[in-house]
Length: 180
Image (cartoon, rainbow, N blue to C red; front, side):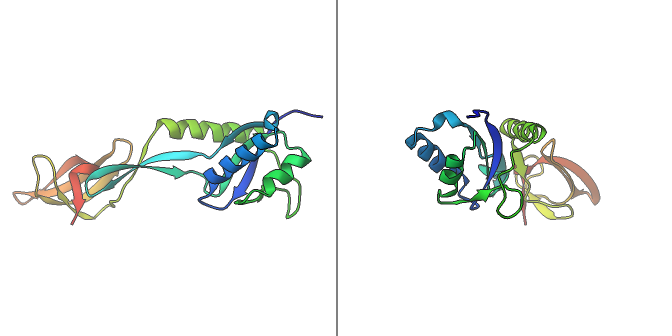
């Protein structure tokens, strides 16, 4: 019996990834097959959205409809996992083929992305260039302007404001402006 664990991808119903993960863990524990299971991952990205000038943290599944599992896939485990509600299938060769293990490079890439997304929070920017906005915070509170640049890395927006008949660029945070 080969006890080597390999990484596989399981297709799930979108939005049910964590539920499927919990069900697989519960079934494998119940069947006393935990020595066959390694890690199970639902890659999640932390996103900050700005609504009404307030930051709201949300978790977004990076690969919706997929669960990544490290397992020694014996025939018994394959059918045990396939019968769990929410599991569509393993990523396979062809329609009814055998599950394909991920290559080491693919696993490293996915694990690297997960580490990256755990450490960096991205902001979902609800604004776009040439949009007219109102400044709601700072010395130019109450002024209207047009967005000229969006800098995602710095989390800043450059807004052109008409002051004394001249366009003046201002660098503002996302929280300092709102849509008109």
